[in-house]
Image 1 (spheres, rainbow, N blue to C red):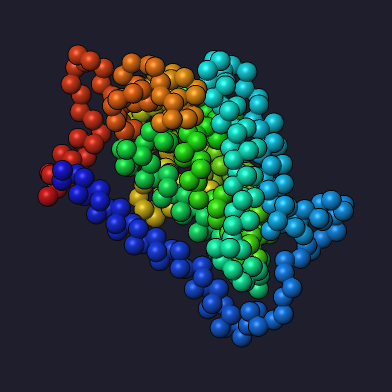
Image 2 (image 1 turned 90 degrees about the horizontal axis):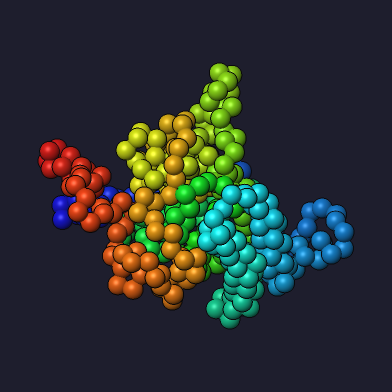
Length: 366
């Protein structure tokens, strides 16, 4: 109970700090305008305009972001990411189907559809606000959006680990016993539908910040996909002395294979794995600020969930609509709420869990 209260206090404190982080880029932009004397909101604006020449269809897509253009781009990006992710040929059948379904349906169907209908609904929900923020310079818009989007996703991700009843909606992402771009989108459908970035991108496009929102989406997609990659592209920054300063900054700023693979490890007792932290998606700096990250510059040897029962792909993707037939599974009918701590097998010798160790530490330190 004392541990739960401490967790609640920690989350409350970090949420209050987050409010300041959300406000910071907006305040910096306002300060820059005050110092320079610029008043871009007073300048006439007709709407977002494309700043480069391109073939007719490409220009039409970008000039119609707020209607059919953005859904078209989301669909194209989804197909491209799916094609690039199909490099793994050692999957078991159930895992292969799950990865492909989680790649295709959200990226090719759910996200484009949600964006399309959101753009239809926004004029009704926010009448008169179309292109209301088109005056914000691109660089400032991209910074503000990156902070708002990624910090919100950090909290979405963190709470799915720290609140036990939410864990089962995120568990699918951690069930993969391997790392690779093909499993980067491996999520339960409920987790995907309530994912903030889809709605934020649509709303920002309606408000006139579509180009900046799209830029952040693409950059974030590259970083998060690379962080899930089985290719340790960050290793040269640790290996070669001349690259160490760049590596030091890089691993604290964005998610890398080393930091994110630690989050997918099946243990946190080896000094490398840290599935109870390293929650950052595009930016790892949130983990640094909130003390939820570790940096080891090493890579776990095993991934996934130790109590994984290889539940049917449809149960992992569509729980709780469809449940697993695996006895004792968290996803089965009446299954236990295990949380992301490993479950003890029946009649197994008693072990001290990480949560219990932390509670002992809290009691010892008063």
